[in-house]
Length: 139
Length: 132
Image (cartoon, rainbow over all chains, first blue to last red; front, side):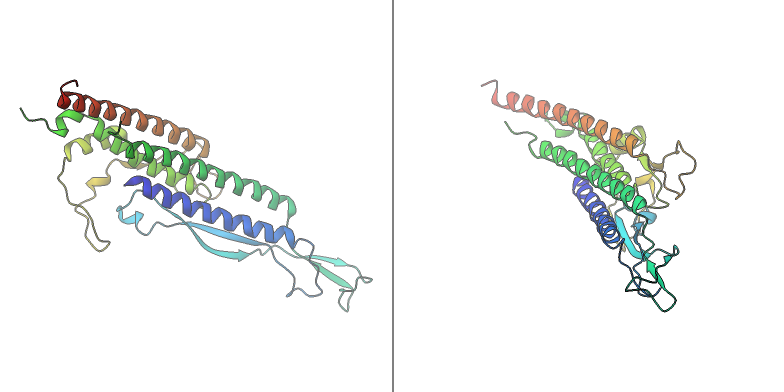
């Protein structure tokens, strides 16, 4: 039954988008965590999406679920600031700020919530289609 | 003269099946709208409909992942979409607006098919009851 597959697919997409929303929330929350060394500084995290194509490539199914392949930390340079008065400053007087781009994160958040919404709508429509199938021949 | 469901239900049983399959393909496109390198797919309705009509009860089914598929003719109607935008930066060819519209239209067509089937059933019931 195709509609149960639709539910599986949209559920996988919703799960992936919520992982994305989670990482965005984590990035925004830590946007101002200052530290005194490069190693300890928070780095922006991004999920990597991947289509679950292992079965689809054998042409056995027509659809692909979304899989979160992993979460990677951004390679963008950290923001280094000269701030000798700061209590967290290192011996040279520098503090390190995370490489979180707040504007980018906000845009990512909007995109994730829109995608989530689209999948909820698809689920809702599929539910209606399935319901009308189940009610076929009644009354 | 025997009443068979095949004769009574006409084409609608096949159109509904094809539309159910198409909804799965479009749902997959929408779900993978943010997946890099995912290519949008779609079902050619005419081909799928012809296949559904000719495949009445026949054909081999894959019931286990390890089974060898009996040729890929089952999915001949499944193709990749030609993207409007040649390069989106990450190799993804899904146009979410288009897919949402397609899903909605497909859903309405499905409901129409179900409506036809439903009236066929009530007609059959009427005939069996003799109009009582």
